[in-house]
Length: 194
Ligand code: M6P
Ligand code: ZN
Image (cartoon, rainbow, N blue to C red; front, side):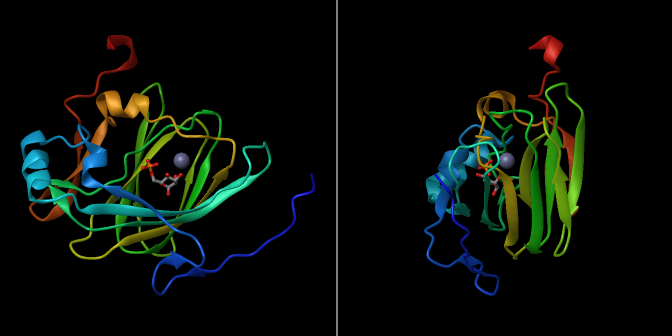
């Protein structure tokens, strides 16, 4: 069936996509993901704040189609760790993703199944290219500003959260003397030791 061209409006000023309802991810959906479990439990006891919202303009799960959308990741911390997305590999591992930062100040944490890792700074105007095979997680390192970014990836890519949920990313982003620092994740094991 012929797919017809269409448009949608991304309203940068109030960080939304007109006509679309965002997926809402609350603190509770990151159970077990933050390093400081006590701080996580204490935060959850105070409430279940929204960490991020995802406006997804999804396309049919067909090779060649591109899904896109807008993510708004709020500022905040769990212990020393900054608010972050769950992070994922793509279910179709050999698919990449392009991120275009529209607002705020963040970092993209990336790693391959073999344990290669990179961290990229995200500030307005920066485009992060996530190659095929690289898991990716966005982190908001701002004190009080939303991290806002537009993204595009192959509609058939899917999300594989399992590997990340089991032990997290190799590197974590925490506040040290008020500034973001990249540290080793003590939970992370190299593939040969899992
Ligand atoms: C980006 C895209 C989405 C993803 C979202 C939230 O906006 O990659 O596909 O859903 O980040 O990240 P996660 O799915 O890891 O919670
Ligand atoms: Zn992705």
